[in-house]
Image (cartoon, rainbow, N blue to C red; front, side, top):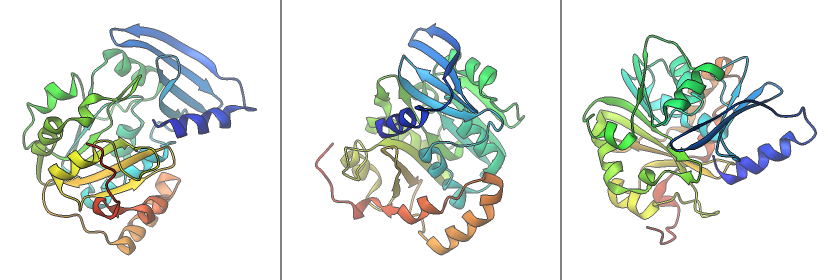
Length: 273
């Protein structure tokens, strides 16, 4: 999660019910904490890095803007035969994809076994028969999965921020190779300051061109929508109608993210690699 979102949630909590710690544990990658404040439950990597947030009464509720924006993938890949999520966290995105986008099968890959345990114990990770959870590194797993999925979500973050893999060209190439024809790669990337550009923007353009779609969200993240080949249509009116049909079951509107969508090439490059 971006620093803007962390600041927002910190300010929001001031004056509300005290935050209670539910569990604290360690693994080979550092400490993990689960807390609760009111109806919201949080997963922390380390002491302060807020990684996930879930509504206790609805494990498929998405509290963060960046996860809501990632659901736009459903417009192009609704009911995808096979979906893959790299990075589980509390599991809210996986729960939401299963419930609202209805893939036939979904695999979630998580590096840390303890994170999987916590997501099941505290965050209501779905027990849907369509869901398979794999404990492995994203790099190792994706190398064995050519031409295997129709929808691929990348959300790889550690205590210090974005995982190095989401800055590496070879990893992105492997992710694109994992997509079947017509597939879609959805990436939660950090923004470079207020530039409107994601980290590794120049590298991404060299790999995928400048016509993939992206949307900035308030938390400081940029969500990228990169097709396996060709170009995604940007039919805002069609997307608005699709979002309006989905809104009653989501409990929030995806329209704000539709209005912010733009081609990567519409944003001037900043010179970052």
